[in-house]
Each structure stands twice: as C-alpha cells, then as structure tokens.
Image (cartoon, rainbow, N blue to C red; front, top):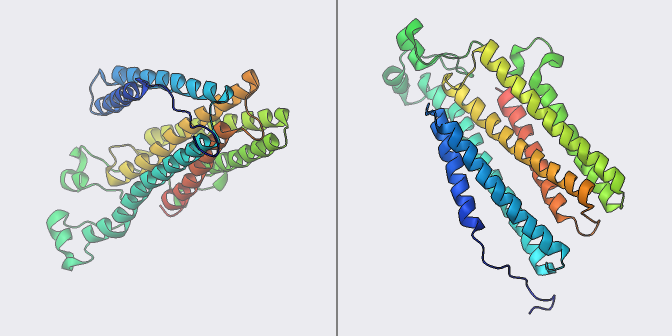
Length: 305
C-alpha cells in the first residue's frame, strides 16, 4: 500500500507467450514470403491474426480495469513510462536504418569509387566504379552487362529528377502526414475542452489522412516498380529506399489502426475524458513520432537522395 493507494496487480495470463508466438509466425512468414516460399503468406496471415487476437484481448482487459477504477495513479504513471520507452526503442530502430544510409552514402560508395586506401577498394572490389548517389549501376551489371541478374534503377525518387513539385508524390505524402499531425493536435485540444463532437471530427479526419497517406505510398511503390525500374533488386539504393520507406509505412499503418481504435471507442462507447485519456494520448504521441521520422526521410532520402 502506497500513499497514493494500492497498486493493482492483474492476474496471471498466457497472453504474453501467445503474443510471442504470433510475432514469431509473422516474422517467419514474412521472411519465407520474401525468399519465395509459397507458404510464407499463409504463415504471415496466421501469425498476424493470432497477434491481433492477443492485442484485442489484452487491451480490452486494460480498458475494463481502468473503467472499473482499478488503475491507481502509480499504475497510470507506469503506462506513461512504458509508452515512453517503447517510442524510444522505435527512435533507436530508425536510427540504425538512418545510420546504415549514412554509412553507405558517406563511406562505402566513396571508398568503392577510389577515395581512401589509395584506391585499393576500387581496384579489388569493383574496378572502374564511379562513385555517385543514388547508385544506378550494380556490380552485377558492371560484370555481366545485359545478362545481369541484379539491375539498377532507371530512375530514382529524388526531387532533382522531377519536372514539377506538384506532380511529385513524396511532396503530397509530406503534406498529408504533416496535416494529420495538426488535426490530431486539434483533437487533443478539443478533448481537453470537453468538446466531444470536435474531438470525434478531428480524430476521424486524422484517421482518414493516415489512410490516404498509405494509398499515396502504395501508388508511389507502383510507380517505382512499373515505371522507374526501382525495386528491391535494384542494388543498395533499392534496398535502403524500400527498407526506410517500407518500415515507416508499416509504422503509419500501426499508428492509423491505433487512432482508428481510439475513434471507435469515443464514437461507440463514449470513452475518454479530459482528465482520463491516456489511451488516446499515447496513440497521438506515437503519431507525432511517425511524422517526425517522415520529415527525416523526406530530407535525407528524397531531397538529398
């Protein structure tokens, strides 16, 4: 017993181990799919479905506990710290990928082009390679010519390659995502002012913008594959491009789903009060984090890329 009341300890649950199994199947299925295993999509779907079931059960229990008044101030602080550490882990996750992009562009490509070590890397690893970014020619192309199995892109997504800003998909992606950051802030402000209708409107608009962003990114990937020759097989440039934008898209998908759940809770159940809205606040924190990551992507992948 603390000065702030008792600390509620939930009963033992099998959900953590089931969640681990679901995540393992999801990752294993995705890896199998990428390596050409026909069973990969099925395993991925089953793992994702199992994990979704766990999340539904788990968060339903947490919501019920809060409604029943079982969450003490101390427990609520633990939720805040937990979400803070989760977002920090995501920061480090993307820091690793941005670090990989920095290493390739700043060190690996110039070394292959002859800078440093008296050009030994250029002579031994890839004789005749001309350092440029994006790398439009792969080592396989340099050796095998037209018979190359791994081909570089014909074009890239950089701003320097477009004729007009208004027809550049990454620009509109940025406009949509930055607008959604403003609308989710307006939703938070409306909730603090006990404006339920305004909260629902602004939050619903944020969810719609998140879905629209994903549609635009799908269109961008289609253009990259169908018209630019930019694929996962396009050497180091294709790998880093889809690694960074793809993982960000996965986080936007998760964030959109989180905000959609909060929207449905508010509209259908009347959940959240101005002084008891951590579920929404944590989702909005995550959404702002996703927006900040996109700003970094837009600058270092699209503008400077």
